[in-house]
Image 1 (cartoon, rainbow, N blue to C red):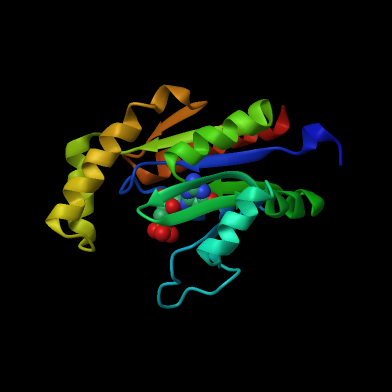
Image 2 (spheres, rainbow, N blue to C red):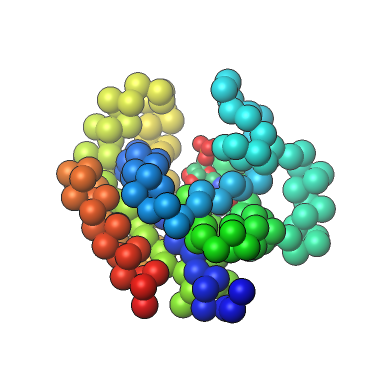
Length: 191
Ligand code: 5GP
């Protein structure tokens, strides 16, 4: 497949910005996009299956893959837990004549954009404000007060890198944010 067909879409966001919902709606909307399954070293959660949400591998295996340069990017997203995009995963998707959609953290997103440059479209999803983000994290009901404060501090740090991204989408009204992403993706894939 020639190189300009090897395009990919990168979606990133601080925790609580509604990224997962947007990613799932975009995957429904674009049959030509395939979710890129990352490798990670955290344990599967209840209901998660190896090779569906992630390739769950050991830290030793992950480090071996780093040494063998098998990752397009990888990060220690949480203390001691690695996550990475396998070059082989992206290639397998391109081999089916589809485009990978990668849903990764802000720093991994900057790395992979640097690697694929103009063949990658990077979109940063942002909550309308830090106050709104805090409200959403509280409403989600899955985090302790301490974890919420940690996520907000992390979000503030991540927001300071927003200018590294090709497109910024504010997730205030969900369907508007999805439409905006869809328009950017359509434009990028057709160019
Ligand atoms: P979780 O453990 O909740 O599934 O994911 C935690 C975070 O890791 C999310 O922000 C997700 O976007 C990010 N993530 C998932 N896969 C990758 C990856 O391959 N590389 C990087 N850098 N981050 C990832």
